[in-house]
Image 1 (cartoon, rainbow, N blue to C red):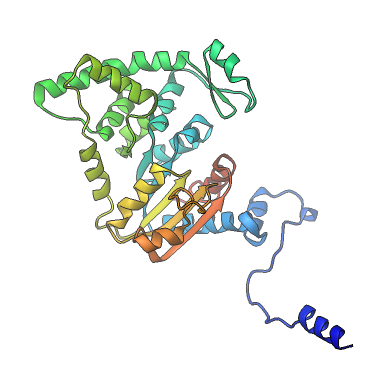
Image 2: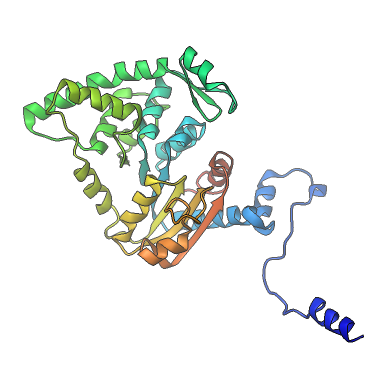
Length: 329
């Protein structure tokens, strides 16, 4: 009996009552209502509830007229998310963009030809023989990069000539600006950024095919240069004096750190939404949760933050549907 008493006391220990959101999913007895299905995520638990919080935070950014930093890695532009980024920039839903070199070049390249759905398990050796580059389960024919070189080399030559004539040194942002102007294609993120005067910053401009073309340009003209310091100063200065700052970062790496580091100069962002799958066990900034950024002063201690673990190609369109596309900034 004594053992039973101890077991019962441990097993049937009374709890405190909780005052909060009851876990509850969508009831399909009510038919199919996609908006209500998305709204039900907030009370579903796990990453669904983090997604619900992300919607709330982004809507707060919009309602509070925060200056919104959008950061995304190049693979996002490889995917169909490129069209959503283009829509956000076209309609001035964000104030500044940060991406990697692939996020610039592939936006331009897709104006010159399509990418196609492929297979994660495709034979790399066979694809190489056919000149097909694979990005996950997306195929990018190498002809696209040939056309990209034909497009971008005359622009780099023009920049070099202007540099020789006037002494003006272009920054990475200036180059992206010029690419957006020259492509003159409404499918392009860079085009709408140029048209709407929204700067796109690329802290890793020498990576990827764009970097290859910069390499070829300097091989031809040894005095051809790009000023990355100017770009860094310009981007960091965007954070100074902001009344409210909000960051939305898809993926991780240099894009994530660049956005957050700039916000450290104003003692931290007011809102932060991360969407990525990186873990923090190895101390990487990629996997770091918002709380770590608070310790550096990159995010305010009073900020509203969330990290959603998941695939941005699934999550981000739904997030935009429940925020930017339904609320006028």
